[in-house]
Length: 90
Image (cartoon, rainbow, N blue to C red; front, side, top):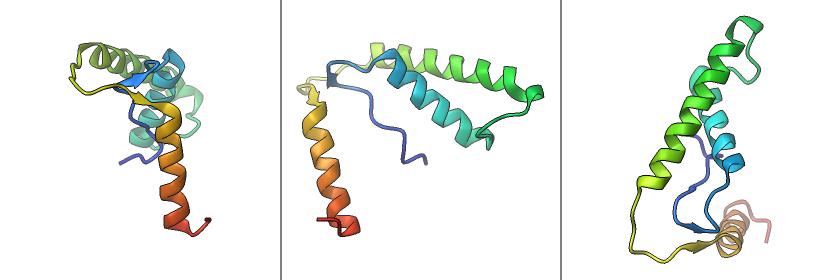
């Protein structure tokens, strides 16, 4: 669906409120089709982002895993390597 929404679960340190909010905003923008909503729709979009962020926060707190937490720097380097291979920017 949205390639810009990143996995937030099982990272050390855990996802921040800002990261969760950004993912919620991206999701609501994709679903609604609005990047910048009109004044009439602004409140509905804002409320939806807040609700999605809260649900995401609840989900992340409820999930359980036995896997060791992932390292953000290592995952970012892997993503850069995949992009270089995919787009030829080696």
